[in-house]
Image 1 (cartoon, chains in turn green, red):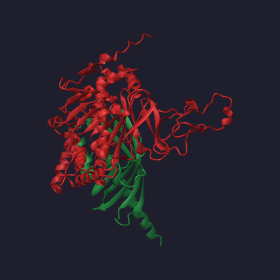
Image 2 (cartoon, rainbow over the protein chains, first blue to last red):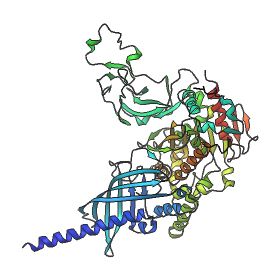
Image 3 (cartoon, each protein chain N blue to C red):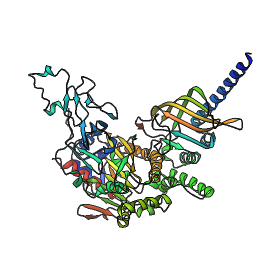
Length: 171
Length: 437
């Protein structure tokens, strides 16, 4: 009678592994500046959202640091890759670490996986180091054997602190 | 120690050019703090930031840590955020509520919302001492003057000088324009303040706001990127959301920007007139026009919507973009660092869609993920870098010099690309720094 439990456990482990790999890949694409591949992680109706504070429950009708669908992500990508994006002349790079991956469950209606994780990101631009950290909340949809992001919510602990310069790309 | 030669600021400003030390010299910055920021009217905030008695919001006037506090009823007070007992900062959050009384966290001295002393613990210990609750030395110090115009609160640390309205002059149209777009004549703050540090002298921001030559150069990348996606959406869906236009419009040609108008008012306030296509004929705009006509009548509605404002700069602390209900306040930190505080307002009683479309501007252009200011801040930092150097002494403001029309102390130009706003700002700057008493 132990078998069903171990099968469920193995499935849960497998899902946790797949989800973790997906989240790691997400941050690797950002660090690798592979913008189009990163945008392609999103479902057609996918959204990237960074609220101004943890108390925000929606982006609808309220301010956001980022609220972008794939079209707006494309504007941002085309901006930073344009030869006259002056702010991109400064050498810069980022390094993300994603951890504490927790699967909270499945949305009863949509079947989307609800996942939480935490991140640290260090950015070096010219000679300046900035450090951002916070939590990700992902709604992931299974499509064609893989995942697509329906919603990536990014709560930065830095969200209400004064920004030294701006955020040119996604965190 | 050899003493520094006395600075003559007059030698730094000529009608068509300014010496780099105005931007790069910490000593000049000290003079600006003393004779401009800690003297003239500085934007404190909007009264709706502090809706209930005891609500407060911190801000800076020059180097002074201030707090704007809602008193009882309609009163709004501006106090130094300092306990008279031992100097401790009384209000500790960026914003919050003081409760029944503003209470010092060190020894529980308590203050009324206007700064007067409510109570001290162990008051008997002050018997037969010089302690006197009615003496200002035992109260939270008030800003010398606090005045409001249409809900926008200003404070001055100088008891003398022109009243707020006289000082604003025609530049008050910034607040008339933003408020009159509401059918009840009022705006309400959206309670979120984005803060971004500029690594450049505060005057870079002031000048850039009314510099119509820079957008199509500085923001070329975003203008083209947004126009690309805008075209794709038009092709695929037959419509282009207005917020793509907010970005693509930055790549408007020099010719079009030059058709705007500029004006410089006394005290350094400056205007860039122009509309950026913000009176479209979509259903939302028409509904807004209908609401305004019902409230004000057709003629007054036309007057309100016919105002020709892109930006108004209230020198030296805010830039108001009234057609989009955005306001940016700057708080200088040092000669090469400037804090900007970025606000959005809701037109009370106007259709929700009008708020929502300006919210796009707040999110895309003015938030910390801005696709516009990313390149502005980069350029200003590079400007500061150059002006700190010995590579040259002068900053050129020659464009359209000699063609400004001076009408009763107001400068006007019909060229949007004129460097009139910079010349007008420095005319006021010099007056502030030389007429120091």
